[in-house]
Image (cartoon, rainbow, N blue to C red; front, side, top):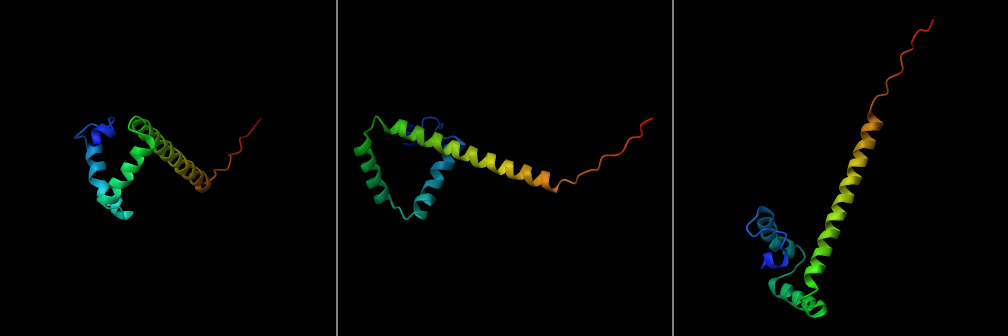
Length: 98
């Protein structure tokens, strides 16, 4: 089922296995059981239709990717600013001119 909804993930690949193995933990964290999940998926299918779901999943994936990139860039900027702040400044050595 996962390969149909996420064709970019190879069935049996490590990313696919990771996502499929972590789904029960994620849904349990939000209090979703299998019945609630099926009801939500049915409502989404009725609202958007089968033809729109792949484009919605693609858009969601791109949004998550962009969010991760922005947060990673922010962390790198913070680290660079901290490194620059803590870097000792070396005084310029005077040179003799004749």
